[in-house]
Length: 490
Ligand SMILES: [Ca+2]
Ligand SMILES: [Ca+2]
Ligand SMILES: [Ca+2]
Ligand SMILES: [Ca+2]
Image (cartoon, rainbow, N blue to C red; front, side):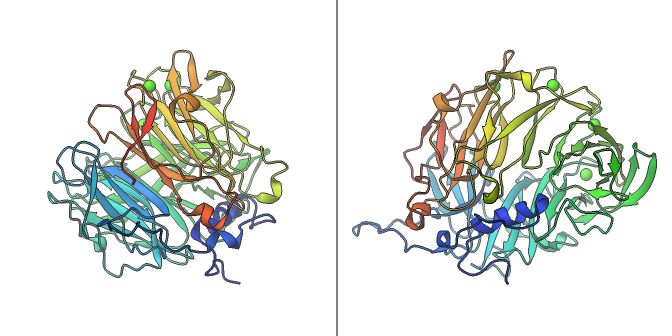
């Protein structure tokens, strides 16, 4: 049976992919075919047809200044078969009023059967215009690839995907842009898992979660996966690999020679100026931190381990929780499997772990100011100083259970202070259940306060009457970490 029958929307297959990481299949109570029926486009009312409209089903978004005018624009990409073959660029006039720039983002072979699942800003070629990496996949995830798009003063991007070597893979993938070899040129790291992969099995064959491939920028905007020299402190093993690997030490035994990571977070975790990587794990394993010891053109990482006995591969971010200038870790598991849900209020906790300054993490859930928050299926973890008080805050987009009837879940906004991370969601954004499949953040109206764009599916209730109600996507920061919906329907 095909992994993705035509009537199944990508929204429905995503849990299958993630589910398979730790559980090995889409269990009972999983995706419901009825979610996939595409409704006709809404009537425009007859007397006025807008020149453009945002997709009804937004899968990914990115806030970036695409045309170098100092205003933050928004790229939005839809699910496949929604009539959009490439992302739309919504250009900001400086007052958070947006208009589409025609054909700004295009690439060879673009097709409505594809979808852009992830986008990241990168400075590929050192000019003054921001560039873009898009991760594009067929709707059934049978083939995925990168698109490299070079920015310009007009906001029109020029495709240069041929500058990325080994640019295809299968499954769900995301990239994080960073300069890993400290040569001042931005590189990127790919983390992905192939269809049907399981992270619970022996990884020595490299057939499970495949993460941590680093594409080095040669300084001229060409990217090639680079060999990594790994020093594993668990057994003092030194070897070369084409991905970041670690010893899969769980419950007192080492499973195979090495395991590949999937989810990664990137930051300077030992405060030496080089960007390190940490990978919260699926399953109860010691969490590996990859301490960067690279030099220009030569990748080298030393793997150390934090003994945090929990499974937290559902989502994560780095932020300085205890305000000592060192990035700490926030993470959670996700509820992927409908068969596991015993009641409709079932959630999973958000965990905090404090960095000792060397990249070693220790659980510190007492650093919540108030009750420990919970999530159901968080999709985007965004760190910004939302209230501009000088400390990192966290927004988490959570769409809730990814199976019928898609009732959604509340998003989460945690504001940081010396008292700890405080759940400010209700006062800041409202705490209604929504189906927010991701989000992006940036200051679109130039007041210095980060605003939010929520990747909501506006058609969900057309096919699932009990699904979460659609809410506006663009939320403007009121200047204190609370938000109001924009009047413009994006
Ligand atoms: Ca570099
Ligand atoms: Ca470092
Ligand atoms: Ca800290
Ligand atoms: Ca703050």
